[in-house]
Amino acid sequence: MFTWEYPPRIIGGIARHCYGLARALSRRGIEVHIFTPEFPNTPYEESNENLFVHRVKIELGHPNFIIWVLLMNHFLEKRLGLEGVDRFDVIHSHDWLTTIAGINVKHLGKKPFVLTIHSTESKRSSGLSTSDSILIDGIEWWGTYEARRVITVSNSMKKELIDHFKLPPNKVEVIPNGVNPDDFKVEVDRGKVKMSLGFSPFDRIVLFVGRLTEQKGACFLIKAFPEIHKRHKEARLVIVGDGPQMGYLKDLIYGMEIGHLVRFLGHVDDNYLKTILASSDVLVIPSIYEPFGIVALEGMAAGVPVVASHVNGLGEVVKHEVNGITVFPADPSSIAWGVNRVLEDEELVKRIIREGRKTVIERYSWDIVAEKTQKVYEDVVTS
Image (tube, rainbow, N blue to C red; front, side, top):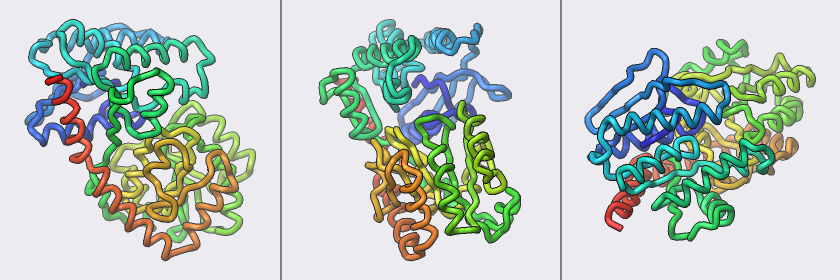
């Protein structure tokens, strides 16, 4: 399995996806080898029963990200070659970032190639307006063409791939992201956690978790917050994540004169994230494009009521007034309405927390995801 991020390198959802999937596949008796770039103060080689992690030294660097990605693919492919291509039955790449390595090993070893597309460049960038975006889009098309089977995370993403890349429907398999529900059952002193953030133990935390990019929509939550705070003086906003919009979002907050109500935590490790989730009163996912939304599952597993934009695959996970509250995307008034609804209706909160946990256990456990992925592997090997 090729992936450009794998714990402790966590940049987005791909790291968590590959980590959860690899562990679940290994529990099913499948020997899984992860090939991923090196990370500081982390062993190059790790193994645990059927799971082997090979962190690869990227021997040449470059400030241009596209060139760095191409170099990374070369060294990932080279490292797999040193293991011996013949020992592997299936080559599985995740997103465009490791697609080229997967394609090359496919041809080198005459092995079936599976590609998981977590999102597309055309939607992430709201169009193909730069040469980099056009190149990335081309790599995505190339990967879907070369793959024997394409996996994606939601029905909306399947339709997007079929329409954009003209794929036959039977080539695309929908297998959602997953979560281990027990990982998020943590005991915390909510009051102490809130005080550690500089808040009162009686304040109520409105939480955002995600990359600070345009598609994640954090700016719309920030614009909604004055309306939330007007009705709930105890409301405080916590933003977890990093990304290119950090400066813009901080300027927005201070321009709105709500800086004293907001905390930016940047990137946090998984253990602290679970602590923050368990201490929060509502998790808001205001994305304008979200092929799936693994953060929604994490919130449900942690027992936090979820308010989410009704977009793409996120709308397939969060069902309005069943396991969460859905709101209109890019609409601060709608987001404020959803958050206020949660902060004001205890019976609703109890119900959506209960149904959210049930959703995660019955539909999105990693064991279910691994079983479906194993079936794809078996199909491509025998077809």
